[in-house]
Image (cartoon, rainbow, N blue to C red; front, top):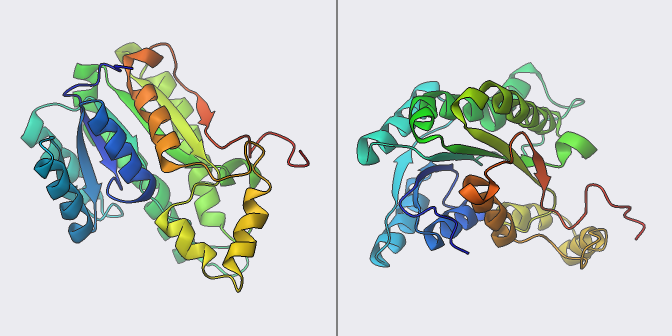
Length: 259
């Protein structure tokens, strides 16, 4: 399906690894121009060099997203390079295990900075261009905002904030025809997920315990499946969809796991 994203400039935070890389690759397939924001220079430059060698267009900005000035600069780099922004995918973040019992004020605030505050800052600085292009925003979220997980108060609170900002922005940006949606992830096998699974004594057994509870096909969601929904939400094909929390999770969050 042609989603009419050719030459659309889309900022993707954390777009060089895991789910973010899947989104970058899906955008490229549609002819869009991803601008990847990453703090890992080696990772993002490797991805960009591969993209350019394949004859496609992309750009990047190095930014530590907990720093407000670096968030602002990342958006400015995209505008300086292409003169426009047609969409934003807020994706970067980490389930950092800042808990109620063992965490503290400083850790909790840092978790919000790592996982929520830059969602606001990137869109805030991109907004003048999004108004011109009538662009679209997709916030990547997590089931932890609805189900809880235990031991991750900072991340869960940040994801609750992502959901709330999605609805708030959808209302605030109605006059500009800017659509805002969130894609909620449950169990997706990424390099970070693999690293977490390997912390268990028997990682294969632990992984099977998780996948057995995913109703549809008893398997993990792939980064490609998430990315396909993201590009759809960015596109004109979802032209009357805004303020929605969309779950690409094989039914994990809402279906009876006794199934």
